[in-house]
Structures are given as structure tokens and as C-alpha cells.
Image 1 (cartoon, rainbow, N blue to C red):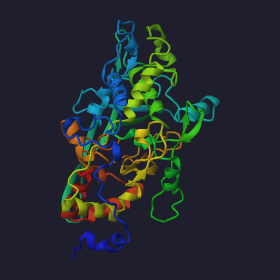
Image 2 (cartoon, rainbow, N blue to C red; image 1 turned 90 degrees about the horizontal axis):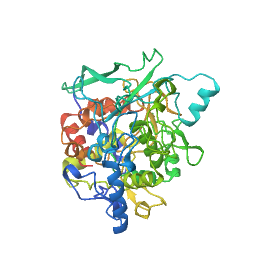
Image 3 (cartoon, rainbow, N blue to C red; image 1 turned 120 degrees about the vertical axis):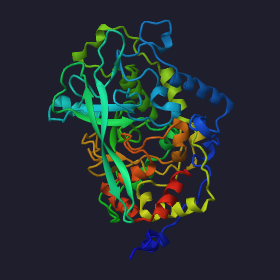
Image 4 (cartoon, helix red, strand yellow; image 1 turned 30 degrees about the vertical axis):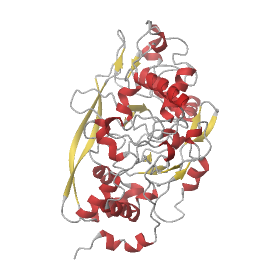
Length: 461
């Protein structure tokens, strides 16, 4: 005899307090913009002069950098090894990236992180403290698949998939695809058997300043390293190096929460993605074996503090779109299921931001649906590449706000999870394992109607 999931979880559901459906997930910063540009709007509560600052940052975010020397000396110094020549190329319309779509396609909006296992040498210990990983001695910490004229790209990224089928308890099935990453045509010799890789698509840019403004105490209050409440969830902060503060702090940004601030995240992106130096990150990802010093640079540093500040201001103030279909009974039923399934154990619905350098971001009640903590997501999603305190099975909970706009912004079906393997939100849910396995199994036990309700809720965000 089959029982509906709603009935099976009735006791759990009755013990939960359902969040009110917030029309403005980004508080006063939220925008009502829809369509392809829904992720590209400034925070709605920015003053006129700050909107001008936003536009300046937008210019540096969107416009391409060029190789030095060039008449465009404010944007020269690209490379010599790089992945893209503009931030916007990865974060298409400030949204999420995607893996290569066909054999031979460029991996512009998907990066491949590299490292090797650490030993107890002083050099490796120093790398682990400040970078969280030990870079490959030849290929560095990130594969650059493009190069300026005369330089040799590091290789070509290839993703191929093995189809898999999962069966729900009601007998229906879902087609999944398991990714297999290879690096073809290595430009500087075989990388060796110790190479560790991790494919990462670019995440959406909305609401990042609000996440930065969440008090660290609020994140630490969500930690449950020893599973004291016995719910199977053991969230914890990553402990990462803050270049500006010269100390270890809680990480917030990146797929493994490997960066402490947006300014440092942006500086590392300039260095790793475009080969551009800054005062905060004064070296790009070139190694001695690649002899990048033979090529002209764009100055020391290539990204001035003013440019880095402008791009950081822009990335802090991209507004979160308002939610839709709040009064739809399907959406409301889906929210109740979201709570009953246990999804909110990691995807924490709401926070209040603290004091931030930007008044527009301070004191806002927000609904990002993330705890910004690391969680063991199981072997299927493991990249087996540690990063600071994060193990090879741990990932930071990604925010869910704006999920319903993903296809509109991308202009095509969006991709989900860190490597873009999931083609729909439901596929992403079914890939969950580890601490989320119990919730995933409840989804497998749900009826088709309940699954539709859950997706309706996610697409309302």
C-alpha cells in the first residue's frame, strides 16, 4: 500500500514553523526586474551617486581586458595565460555559468581548479595556510585554456557524461548524467598521476553583498560540527586566509567557501581567470616552468586599487529579484514540503544583515536559503580535492534565491551544482548525498504531485 509523503511526514511538518513567503528576498535592495536582465540591476535602495559608482564597476566587469602593451592602458596586461578576458564572459548576464555543451566547446564559464596532495614540507605548509591547497608545480592552481599570442595554453578541458537512471518509489524514473573530466593537449607536459582537479561553473552574482553582511556570529550559530541535534547534518565554516587582515577567518564565497570577502574573491578571479595582478593578489597563476616573465605586463599591479574597489562595489550591489507566484497553492504546498523534507537544515531561509561598509546592505531581512557552511555531500558529488578546512566531499550550501530566474537569464536551460551536471533543479536534488541523503530519499519517496509542488516552490524563489 502506498502512502503519500505528506502523510508520512505529518508529525515532522506540524513541529516546524513555516517562513512567511517574502516578496523581497533581498530586503530593500530587491528589484522587480524580470527577464534576461533580472540579475543585472543595482540594489533598489542605492542613492543616485552610488548608482554612478555601480555603473563604473559594471563597466570594468563587462568590458574586455587586452594584452600589453596597448593604448587601453587601464585594461591591459591580460594573461599571458588566462581563461577569459572579461568577468562577464563567465558570469553571463551576472548569472551562472555552464560546462562545455559539446565536444570541443570552450569552457569559458567553467573553471578547473588544480592542486596536488600536500606533504609536511615547509613550502606545502605555507601553501596550505594561505592558499588552502598546494598548487601543481607546473600548472599552478587553475587550468588556463587560453593564452596571448606567443604563449602556450595549458590544455583543453573536456567533459563527457555517462547516463544514469534513478527510480522513484512510484515507479517513475529520472535520467541523470555523471560527468568525467579530462585535460587534453597539455601544453607543458603530462601533469602526472598526483594531479587533483575540481570543475566549477561560475555562480550567479546576485545578493553577494548581503551574504557578506551576515554577521559571522550568525554563521557560527548554525554550526553543528558534532551533530548535537542528531539530525545527521554537521555544518561548519571553512577557515581561510584573509590577505588584507593577515589572519585566518571564516570563508563565505566560492563553491567551498574558500574566500573570506568579495574583494579578495575578485582579486583572485582577476589573477586566476585573467592573469591580472593586484596589490591584494600580486602574482598570477603562472609558474616558473611556464616562463611568463618573458611577456610584457600591464604594470605593477595591473588592476589598480580603484578598479578592484569599483568591481567589488558592483558585485556587492547586484539586486536579488522579487519572488513570484507567492499565492499559488502549489508554491505554498511546496514550501511546506521543503521544510518537511529537511532541506532547510542546510538551506537556511532567512537572516538579518549586520553593519556593512555599505548602508544599503545593512540591517536587511533577507531570504537567501543558505547557511554558507560546509557539508559532506557524499561520494557522488565529491571532487576529492581539499581546500583549506573543506574535505574533498564537502561543499558550501549554495543560495537558492533567484533560482526561478535561471533559465530566463541564461537564455537557455540553466545548469546546476558545482560542475553543471544537473540540467534541472530536480536533478540537482537527486544528486544530493552525505548529510543530505535522508532528504534526498524522502524526495524519492514523494508522489509525482509532491515533486511538482517542491519544484514550484523552488522556481518561485
